[in-house]
Image (cartoon, rainbow, N blue to C red):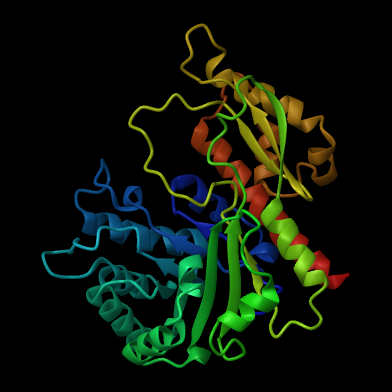
Length: 358
């Protein structure tokens, strides 16, 4: 069980995100519970993974390496529901078995609209591991008049009580149109009974193409500001929700293009906004290519957002400071996203902690 003081980042378990988790300090690890959402690339067959089964085995090993034995919420809803491992085993069941062998404290995430095979795999994992489950509700679920009986039906199927289930209300894209926390709490059945209560949303833009020219831009962290505003005025709330976001990604998942000309950009989180050091496409003809990253890092290190934290703030900040001006080893899209995610996770976890300590 955890309270509104905990941070629940939603991560897609790509290389940058999992290595960002690996490099977190213990003070940050103690304050967050990640919700890992596997995407098709997470189990893609490649040089090191001959089959989806091999890929899931690697996922379990990576979870142990990058997160250890702390609880980890894991959702497979974006994985093809027809996929079976070794011809018959549901991927969630297969991952749960290998996570168990790796001593990973995996908590399976489900929703109201998963198929019967998915729910069976969740029920079996819950029965074996005795760690309960996580129910992820969507914005559409909240408006459904059958929400209460649907939730009760699912809990009966999983053989769980609300006190054994983490509840995540995922509003996805933050557009300011969803109910305030008082109204939200009244829509959720038995709000006081759930093991934990989390409200998730994300305000990071879908991509950086809205800025046509290289430069420095700012994006307000509207998801954080909305949660903060409600929590600070929430003495009368039935129950305060924990904060959850999508980090420095947009909430809507899109499969990556085959051969992207991605921009050499840096995403950096501060008190109430993101600073975007926008580069041009690394494959632009006649462009500066990968050398833009160390150049942008130099500019970022001179800005007040970075100076407020400093290179010792996180592993991500140390990377930015170390690689600023290092044109011999400019890094790549994954390493700079890793630095941005590591900084973001550290910043938000400490931001929440300092809010309640104050």
